Length: 440
Image 1 (cartoon, rainbow, N blue to C red):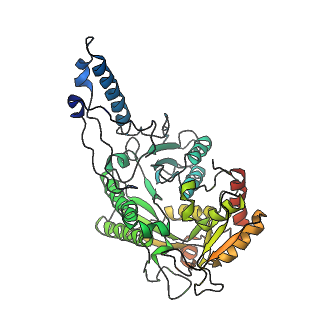
Image 2: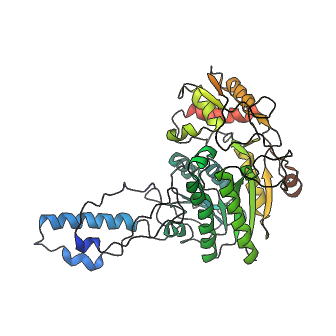
Image 3: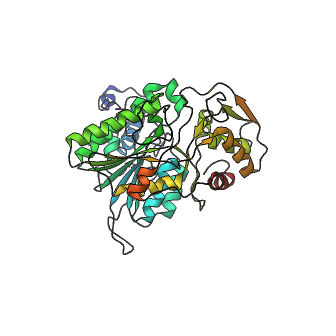
């Protein structure tokens, strides 16, 4: 977890101090599934230890002890634990004369999609609380959001959805009207090599979120799901009635989370939800305010859009296309690339249509683009001489071809993708990335 201060090593072993610390509560998911950090149970009863005749060792031990208490205590209070000294206070009313839509909790709001959604929610007049543990989110994106947020419309909580006490911080202090649940790790290859991490982070954390929403009386949810739930479909394009048969733990974990949401709504009739299964998200804010910048140590997982730009910028020596013997038009896998702005628009459209049972929509363009076509477009957009190496072996867990039938969301919500020109959308992403070679 990213915290306001660096972790403190508990190097002292004074029994009278150590006995004051609880063991903490176990993570119900979280990125690593490790135990939560311990919580201090109070310090007022120990003030008598600071006598004027204390030895230097005891004074030093007490100083460390008090520092630890302040550190741990900062994460246990109800709306405070934010990534900076000021988490942000909210104004739960309109400040521009428009009707106030409400207060939305955005999980994973520091991520690529979550940050773009938060920006758009400002435009719609919402007050937003972001909760993110910054394991893969971007503090730079949050800084940008702080600068653009209308007064009283952004609060940021540093918290792990897998730790109940930290998750509750998103719901205390201010009543929540709606949750948009983006937070998840999302690399297919990584899910194959570390499946339990994905079941913890996606499925278990969604269950814990539902439990917490029930505790606080929050009855509206928009869930971020994926086309990976379909696996390798027999018939294209993919409709919402296409059978689900995920072939990797990422898709399975998302599908199990969907099932948990449906089962929960079946016995909680006041709870309304929407599930959006989206396809391959890329692009960036057309005005250049936000973009996508995964941590450098995650580059080897290699979503194709980020890898193309890394190669164009000379951050990696070559772009490796993995998988050239798929049963597709050119042997590389085929994907439906959806611009992040269009995806966010779909979320805005569905907010007023959450229902019980949950509504389900595919979100894509309806167009299939091969990886080879994508890389050629990347060379044209960037103007860079990108060295491309094609590898016959595909990534573990990759499926051959997916693209969406989006007629349902168009007919029922009036939504359709606006940025359907691949090079135009890629151009938005490239302009931001070229101006932010090393991220925010």
